[in-house]
Length: 203
Image (tube, rainbow, N blue to C red; front, side, top):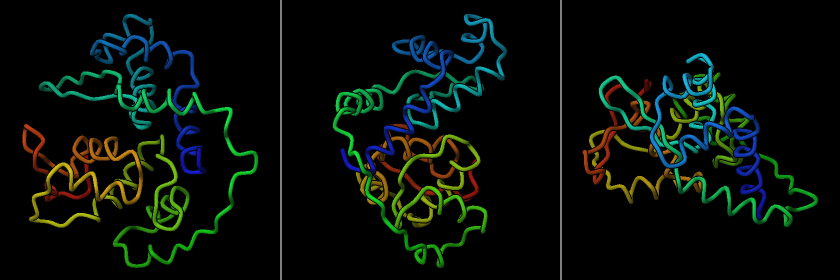
């Protein structure tokens, strides 16, 4: 397990390191659930459930399906499989993680706010993501950077989207899904083509 994978595992562990979130993962393991349903089942408020859902979703553990105004969540099996694979190698973690110095000059040409660039300094190393932020505000800053890798008025195949994202982070599926969910990109119903939305600020 290399340093980048170790950081990804750490992000996953942080997202799961809560008794209520672990229970919720079990509830969404094979069945779609709404925030309201889980709030009733667990005896918690909807804002509390939403908080936990946002943590799990930002870490890539949940798939979201919209039906009108309702949001249905279910465990992302590919992400869970990745976590299990990492967990199986936990006893092979390096005893002295590599220390690399990041050259942030690549950010100079980005049309992003100083606040967004500060987030990128914390979550990237030489132009590549080291981990996915769990806080939505920071996650949106990362997505604003990712979307700058694409061009307007271009239709991308799913493979092309994956290849572009893979250049900066291995878990392209989580980022691709978030670009759509937060309104940075749109896609055909069958998922074959993707394109940038006019409003690049996201939702």
